[in-house]
Length: 186
Image 1 (cartoon, rainbow, N blue to C red):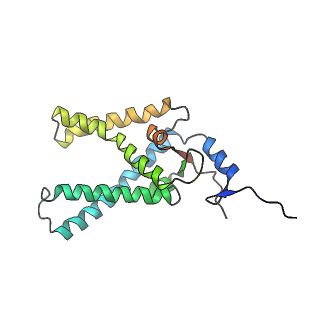
Image 2: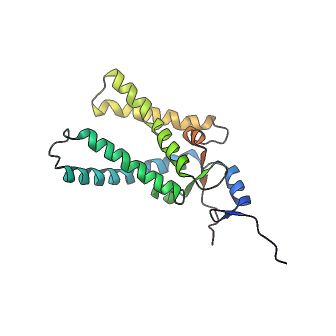
Image 3: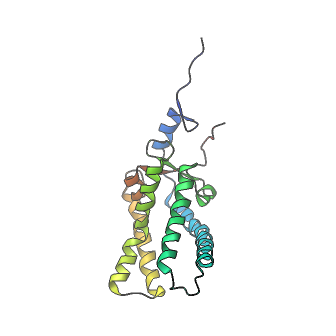
């Protein structure tokens, strides 16, 4: 008679998933380094999508079709993150910094969780941009201070989380884990 192995989820045993879900969060420095690197990667994504949009709509001035371009870039960013988070739990920057996004139970992230996380992750930007807009600060040089200041405050708020996760991960039922010691399924 053969002995049955524990059920596997996404190529990992249930015990491994539970262990991953309880492990410590990556350090804040590593998470912020991945965040900054993600910005570099996204610069290329946004520039490529913007160029394709401009060429395909014959946009000759930056303000013509601005709302359409903003919507297109927002959709491209959503597709980028949703794809990577639901297909392995790592964006390009997360791979470089060996971080992985998993559900709070250690399982792979569902499309619904990825979508919720994407929407909640705008908390990195919306409060400072809304404050600047309400204050009438429309020049880009006036936006950098509030953006950087709020990003630092929001990052430090993760220290108040019981598992040192970002709060948008709490709201979406996900968590970032350190992938350096993760055994890949064979």
